[in-house]
Image (cartoon, rainbow, N blue to C red; front, side, top):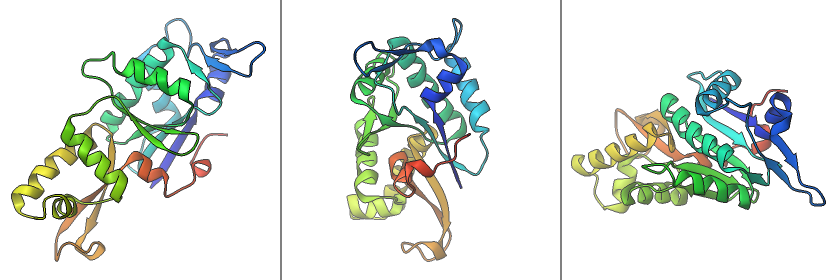
Length: 226
């Protein structure tokens, strides 16, 4: 299993130095542009694919915003549109890490301009997770459960939330979890009965949020290009 990371500030400095602005008199860095004049969401998705070279072994992609204080609306718009689109295409969560407050405000503002709003995970510099955008109540309930309780299967969630593991209860939860997985908000791992305690035979999926995946491995150790 592989987690891959892109250092956005370094990448933009290498590819498009004019896109980075250093504030005079204050130690503030603004990401003005992600690329040249015609750089839009399709170009950003192409850059991410080129950088990460997606494979079946990948379980999480991280866009590291370390060092970036401010994002312009145009840069934030491209980021909040390209990350969920890529996550949905590969069924692999895309998470923004080391997100400072003003940068997060920009991402959230742009995410809410879409219909329906884009939804992305961010982790701030303290390591705290934030969900940007709006999701239906049931999805929010499941995401909050997984964040609080940790990785779980549909049957485990049903047993705790509803006190029942009937086929109907588990089936309904499985549908919601599949939608969260397809949108790139959670990752999943296929496990057999021998690897879990809630079944005698067969297999199931264990789901976990993108931030939960990062808690297993320090952010500094994720694969990145030199």
